[in-house]
Image (tube, rainbow, N blue to C red; front, side, top):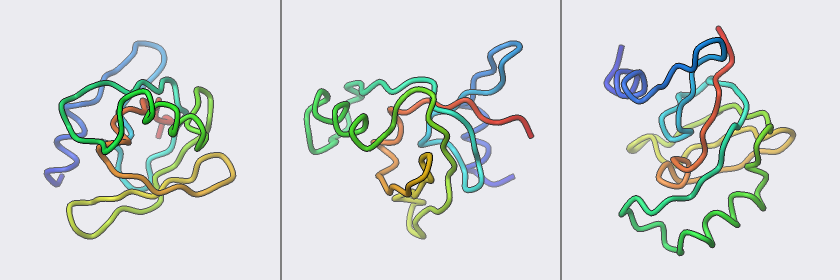
Length: 108
């Protein structure tokens, strides 16, 4: 298991009778699931825009509760940015912005 996978396991939360939830930023290529929360928070990182604007942009791109999502690609350097299939479209975003999207992973 590589370091990214170990970090992902450490960050995952298991909800009894539901499954494993992770931040989209901690998901790996091939992970699939459904968005259960989109919550832009002030984490001290520079997102380039204020929190309300980031929240609005994510929602406008289609990152909404109930949307199906799959991680389809990640950048070669630092695994950033990531590309996801979001319902019927493809979207690329920075991992630090993807951290505001919580997904419930499909069971293997």
